[in-house]
Image (cartoon, rainbow, N blue to C red; front, side):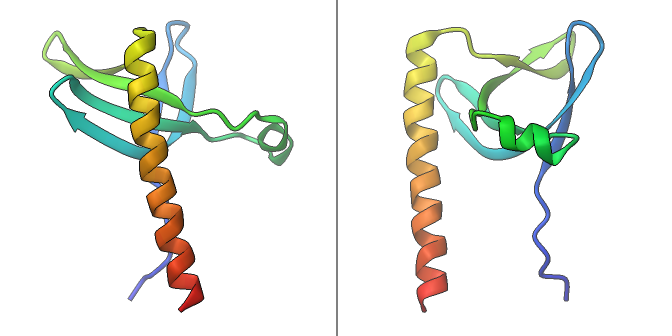
Amino acid sequence: MDNEFRPDLITLVDEENVEHTFEILDTIENDKGVFYALYPIFDSAEEAVEDDGEYYIMEVIEEDGEEQLVEVDDDALVDELAAEFEKHFEELFDDLNEDVDT
């Protein structure tokens, strides 16, 4: 049995056709839509160390019959989603700590 942890990765292409790979940290689905918390994956350890640790909140939209991810540009919604994501992260961290302590 393979118990090895493997992150969920997604590659997005920006407006300049540059690919960026992200780890999907969490997903929220509510009456306002479907949202992902994404953390960038870096090509080098040096880039990772220099990173400020911020994640991106993206919304799933449908355009021309295809699902796409776009950055959420409503500051109030970003704050609301960030609070919910942070709560999820804290719960996950607490659960992981309990597993280690037992």
